[in-house]
Amino acid sequence: MTRQQIRTVITETMKKKNISDRDLSRKSDVSVQAIQRFLAARDEVSTPVIMRLLKALEIDTR
Image 1 (tube, helix red, strand yellow):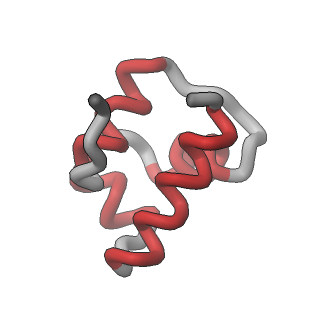
Image 2 (cartoon, helix red, strand yellow):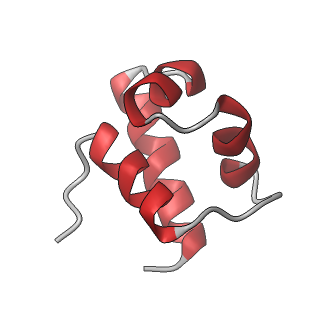
């Protein structure tokens, strides 16, 4: 899965579950700014950070 596909999955899941950037930040322990920059494709984050975001949204990573 590419980073853009990951961004899309995260964004769609956030909308579906009605989770804000701030909510995701609290659940994943990733700053709101880092989440916003990543989702806007203005910055990259590490693989462990992506995994924390996916886990916080209960997205299966298998």
